[in-house]
Length: 493
Image 1 (cartoon, rainbow, N blue to C red):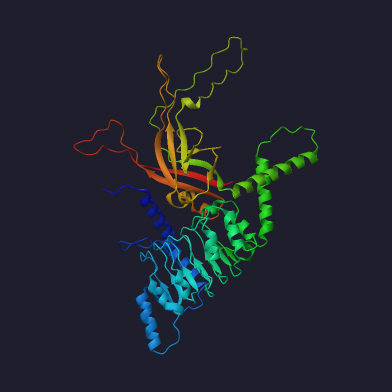
Image 2: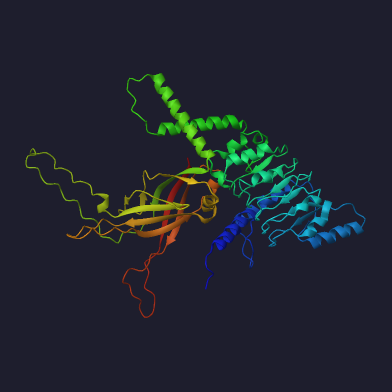
């Protein structure tokens, strides 16, 4: 019997997947499994980041304190100088950093404890005065001890931990002025304003590389430009592993003005404009509308909410309907007063309620939306035109996790035609029938992209027809499976 699904179990699974994404390895490995290419890419990226801040390429690496201690003692007995070493405790299921690690003192130049279960770092970490690289990714940390006395510390990796808006100021204050690189990716930072205030309050003059992607604040449109436009952001050479644009403040202003003008042009006019209105007055009206749209977009980005526009482009692979085709429309009655030779009136098109239709429903953090009904017809590919749905959601860790980890479910539903009521009885309810369910992931949106289109595919096995009976103890024969595909666009607005 499988264990019951609990909140704690779901949280452990979420953390394991985040650790896998950051460290390139699962939280724990029961047996050897073939390597995936994406894991290799993650591991190589992590290695490049670490080497970028290590000036000691030939430094020996140990995976346990005992091995490091033996190496130090061997060097001392041989009369050698102070040994520089790297201690790598990745994926060792640690809940605390072993106290013996601090005994390495000035010999420890790089400490890596990626993919463990550490909630708190030892306060005496500053005993390792020559520490240069500290990688704590994929743990359960929400804070750091005081590291300001580590004058040589150049890189701190805090990706995939539990740093949030309330704990970030203390984390920034604990960092030394020598810090050149800080990785805060995949944490729980939701407010861009809080982040900017934390970094402006604590000057880090040496900071040149900053990673923020995969935080909930990554769902703010143009968040990278807004960071790069600040006083500390203008000194960065890499933001989310890419160079920020020069003159970011001017680029931000132009981009927001263009977006606001486009939004104002697309929005319906509040009141009809007289044909003889003066051109100057019309231009002033457009400018005021653009400024209002810009102010609204800025207010939304400052809040903890994000607006999404979800558009279903097309649906493919829908199997033929089991329902009989609708009867042809009856011709309209002939008007006896109509002129001879006049063309007969065209029959009225059938109403949607009289046809079998398709509806696509999706859910984001509990908010469910559905497209308008589209006739099913006989085509295997169906275009869903004008199906854009805009919804405004709280910018939370749960929303980030849906885009990055658990995915967004899309359900394809068949709505049968409305049954004709029987005289003297209430009309029967029309119950949609689930054709298939697809789940898609949208990681680029959580990493700074503002728009993404993808085709989701899923092999669907239809159930056995109603009334099908098993023969000679065998299961009923199932209909052949089919591949359902869905082209979807999601955009931050």
